[in-house]
Amino acid sequence: MTLAARLSAIDERIADAARLAGREPGEITRIVVTKFHPAQLVRDLHALGVTDIGENRQQELTAKRAELHDVPLRWHFIGQAQTNKAAAIRRASDVVHSIDRVKLADALHRAAVDDHALDVLVQVNLTEDPGRGGSTLSDAEALAEHVLGLDSLRLRGVMAVAPLDEEPASAFARLRAVADRIRQLAPEADWISAGMTGDFVEAVQAGATHLRIGSAITGPRPVQG
Ligand SMILES: *Cc1c(COP(=O)(O)O)cnc(C)c1O
Image (tube, rainbow, N blue to C red; front, side):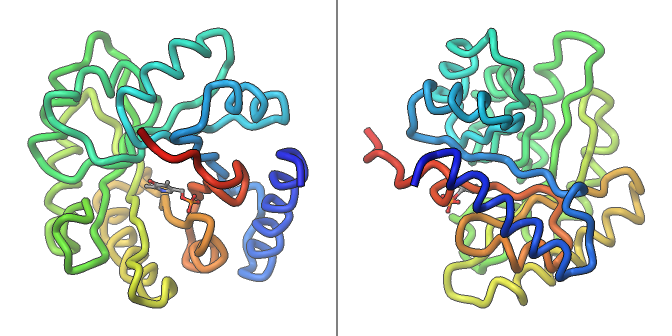
């Protein structure tokens, strides 16, 4: 299958999942995750109408964004972030999905260079494994409140990756519950970033507004260096 065929097949499956869940396909943003793939693939995706690109490593994001400075795209940073990379992440990102601790929020806030507010999501860890990234379910609200106090950051909602050892539907239900609580603090923070190649249908059912889909569209990732 060509890139165009894979992209349109996924978009059809997203639209079907949305309709089955009683939702409008148009309210769902499909982010194509291009990590480990060359910038040319991003250019090809843009030519097919893709507007939103996801990357999980700062250096790769910075390099691709620089190489593709002539291409109008929204860049989503979706990886674990080191605090000392906050300025570089802020420079290269339109949206940061992975705010998982107060220190990172503060570092991104301090890295602001103008009045433009950076869109951010609080990442929630749906597993018991602290190494998987994200704040605990119980800390997520306090972290969201902290972000709301930083005027250079604009809280848009929550993000999570489903655990490997659990049905995605039950994990996404926990995410949905925390998303609903955060929306009571900040009604405009209504994004839910969830759903990858293996579980985007369940994510749409759980109310995801932003899907992060990689390999089903790009094909297998090149071996990482
Ligand atoms: C790589 C990645 C994805 C996309 O994964 P696929 O299974 O290839 O769709 C989504 N979210 C995050 C955080 C990732 O790192």
